[in-house]
Length: 303
Image 1 (cartoon, helix red, strand yellow):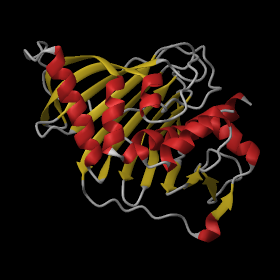
Image 2: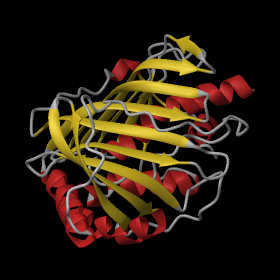
Image 3: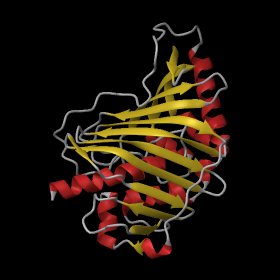
C-alpha cells in the first residue's frame, strides 16, 4: 500500500505543477504534493532547477523594501498578462519523490499541461513519464506506468465537481478563469510579505534580480475569491517561502516555492523559458480516454 501511495503521489506531481502553471509568476500556494508519502523523511533543502550560473552578488542593490515590493508585484502582474508561458519544473518532496519535466500554459483558450520527464522514487530511478493536460474544465491524466493496468489509457477527469477540500480548490483554480486574470493576480500579489531585494544573479545566461518573500496562503486564497484553506501539516501550509527572479524587462524568469512545515516538506521550482510563443497541446484520442473511477480520483487527490 505504501508503494501504491507513493506512485499516486508521484503522479500528483504533474497535477501540482499544472495548478502552479495556471498562474506561474504569481504563486503556487496549492502546489503541495499529494499526501500519504511517509513523513519521516528529512526536509529537502532548496535546489534550483535552473541554478544561477556565474557568481552571485552577495550585496543587494540599495532598493528600499517598498521599492522591492512594488517591483515584485509589478513583475507578477505583467507576467500574468502574457497569453502563453512555458518552461521547466523540478519538484522534490519528503526525500521520496524527485521529478523534473516541462510545463506550459495558455490563457485564451484555457490550456494547461505538465509532463514529468525524469522521475526518482525512494532514491531509485523510475522510467515513468506521467502527464496531465487540462483543456477548459476537463483534465486528462496518464500515469505512464505508475498505475498498474492503466496502459495507454488517459483518465478523463471532470473538474467541475472534484471531491474534498483539495478537489474543490483545484476545481476553482483551474476552471474559474480568475487566475488568468491579471486583475486577480494583482490582488493576490498582496499576499507576498517580507519582500526583499537580494541583488543580481545569473539565471539561464541572463542577469536577473532576486526577490525573497513569504507567501500567506490564506490571504492569497481570499484575494483570489477561493475558499480559505484550513492550514495543517498534512494539508495546507499557512505560509510558503518564495524566491522570484525577475529579468531586465520586468518579467518573472523563475520562481521557487518551499515549505518545511510539519510532515509535508517540498521544494518546487518553475523556470520560464518563453512568454507569448505558441503553445501546442493536443488532447488524447477519444479511443484512449475513459472516465476515472471515484475511488482512484479520491486517491489522486489525497482524500
